[in-house]
Amino acid sequence: MTTNNIKRLIVSAVLGAGFITMAGAQEWVPSRYGADDRIGAANNLSEEIVLQAAKLITTGKVYSLGVETAEDSPAYGTRNFSIDIIASGANVPVGTDAVTSNDERVTTSFGIGSQIDGLGHLGIGNQYYNGLTTAQIVADGGLVELGTHTIPPIVTRGVLLNMAKHLGVDMVSEGTAFNRVDIEAAAGAQGIDIRSGDVVLFHTGWMQLLGTDNQRFISVQPGVGVEGAEYLADLGVVAIGADTPALEVIPFENPQRVFAVHQTLLAKKGVYILESMNTAELAADGVQEFMFVLGQPKFKGAVQTVINPIAIR
Image 1 (cartoon, helix red, strand yellow):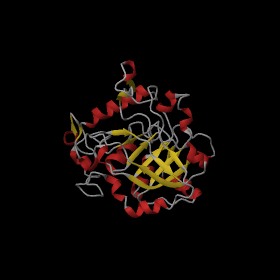
Image 2 (cartoon, one colour):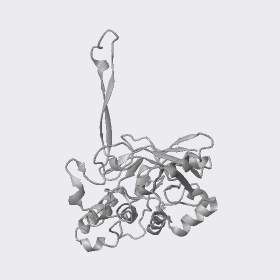
Image 3 (cartoon, rainbow, N blue to C red):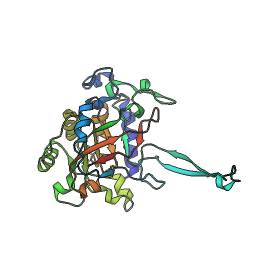
Image 4 (cartoon, helix red, strand yellow):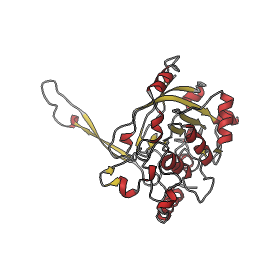
């Protein structure tokens, strides 16, 4: 499936969603965290969980989970990134110390590179987390509800499920879905018990394609299936991520259900999605659990935003 085909599917799904009535949302509204909640599974974070995560630090090694965002970064649809430098050095230096400087001007989509999807990103029939409608959350100046600037800092236990190792391959094949039986088997093999408040990351080896075959990297991928997403969300995890650009399996399990995992996690369950996570170094070092730290940029009203989470072992 090409990027353009995916884009067309999204447009078709959005147009079709306009015919879904409010009654269709009642199965997943209100949220398990209450009708007035706006932060979803982040409610499962606590000071106790932070202290427990800190005990996982045994070596002090720090891992950057973000990838560089550049003008040639693969991206869905019309998303893009460009940067220009405004250099004072081209002018006369200022003052007795001959001060010169550089500033930048950036034009970008936040949904490019390593990113977090907020709860206002994907909905079902123009309804989003806790049944909030497009009219309620969208304004000219950004999201007035569910913006990523409202996500609290995420400091918790991170878990890496090495699906490539579990399946005995260097890179998991496109279209491979991770559902409950697969997740339980991989976690069991690693001796990992997934708990409420965790951030769960999947390593598939897919990022080997980044910079070598960007078209394939962005168009198809292994990933979480709908049942797998429901299973992890019901365990109380705060966020789910992978070393793939969309987290969920593509081609989709059901071609008629476009980005159903996104809808399940964001709209129905209030679980955040982490995309294009650089898990290679963690996997190479055999890291299975770690302290996960993320304080996302507070761009008010953003739907998603570029991030560089940190894993500390």
